[in-house]
Amino acid sequence: MPLALDLEARLFPADESDAPTRRGFSVRRLASSPIDVRVFFGERSALQSDGGQRMLARLASDPLVERTERQGSNLAIRLHAEYVDALADWLSSHDGREPLNAEIALGRRYRVNFLNPNATKPLHVGHLRNTTIGGALAASLRAGGANVVTQCYVCDIGRNVCEALAGWERFHRDDDPTSLGVPSDQFVGRCYAEYVRLLGATNPNAATNDPIAAEVELAGDRADELVREWMAGDPATRAAWQRIRDWALDGQRATLERLGVRFDRVFLESASFAAVQRIVDAGTAAGWLTREANGAVLYPAQRKEYAALALVRPDGFPTEHARVLGLFLDEARDAQELDEWIVVCGDEWSTAGDVALEIARRMDAGALCDRVRVVAHGMVTLQGSKMKSRDGKALLIDEFLDRLADSERVRELARATERVVDEQALVEILVKGYFLCRNFAKGVEFEWDAFLDETHNPAWTLTRAVAVAEQRTRAAKPGATDAQVLRIAAMQYHQYRQILRGDTGEFLPTAMIKFATGLAKWYLDEREQPALDRVIRALLGSCLASVGIGARHSSSTISK
Image (cartoon, rainbow, N blue to C red; front, side):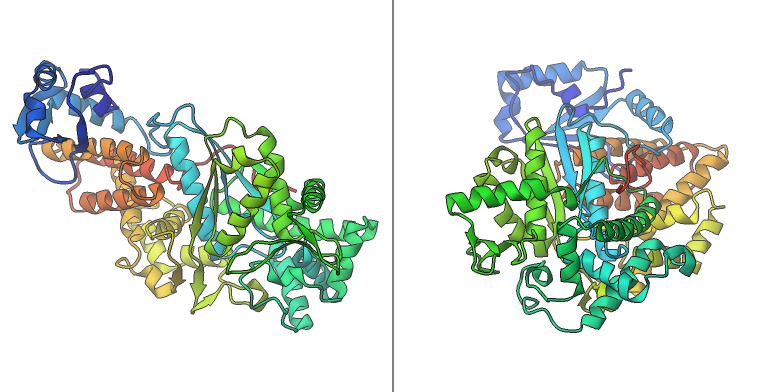
């Protein structure tokens, strides 16, 4: 019996030119039924045409097909038990640690840009949502067979970084993370927060919609002096800056390792200055950039959010808008063969991103701009407020992971399943599953009690099913498996393929986690059955790996 993994292509080959047009192809869901596949045609007469009759005759002789039944304009197909058994055996041979590669997107090339952190603070759960979405999207494309490069832009220089440096100078010059016994990124975050609190004054641009408003206007303080010294190449300032930056990135790297997040490429904004100068020279010469009397360089954005996009401050230092744009233009040089350049960002950056693409087109980067897809997500709030590391209103990722791993509920789940899946692995499923099962376009108000509630966080159901399937598979108790139950389970592989192909119309990682959660609920209601346990372990593990949970890729983390 041949093992057809692409069932639709196997039953309806592309070279059957006179076959009636299909309007839909639906594989068995989680219900008892004699039907494995339903095919939808537009009209009843489609199956009565000459092409339809030849298609029906071919299906009747296909060794995969046990029988077909015409139901109006639809066709119901039941597959041979030998095929289902072969599919179940194939699934059972996988341990679920890597996604079952569906080879749907072979030959396609993507870059997925996400996280894009500041080198001033530890990562908080707002970063966690972004990283979870970006990693899931990249993993889904990889599971489909695409060539995917993951990358991030690191804000390693700017007024905020110099604020952290100024805080270190004033409060902690004789300290370092090791002497204080704190994670290095939290030490930098402390320097940053203490300096900002000392400064005290509200930035005059803070009420605008520009996400970098605090960087645009000069404050005339030590941080601005450090910006100028850095631009001038002062050796002492550069050495202190590098120390602060490295501490921040080292700590962030350790956090990302806990999440299994790695990047293939990392771009530092401190390397963007040559590209920024090209933008300024071209734009001022052509007249689409204006240089103000105070020295600032602006682009007339003409958006209701803000009238102009500041690219250069009055002191000549490029803003983050300009630095990010410079990195993007440098990428345009080797992006000719890309199918898509995907960026995952908070929705507060959407307008600035649109304006940046306008500028990039003026710089002859239109070919890459045409391939850009923006995945903008809502903010994560805590007690109704935006995450702000500078005033302590942020739940750090490390604190969140530690608290969850030490919680009695996670410990009990690990004990109940004999720790075949350890606490850290359970935590990864719970945390990433929590964010992926939500509409990414909407904000998330994080509450600890709600997170622990299975009705609010269906990732608990998924986590329990993964642990139970692993435990039962390892125990390998003898016993029979109900053939109908095994058929239902094995056919879910084809649902998995359809989701990877994007047939659901939903955001791909969200559709996959919803599917996996539904499968988990169904499985937990079934009795222990050896063949079923092995198939479910493979399917759930593959679903999770295909959205970046559990699977690991051999690429670099944030580097200096």
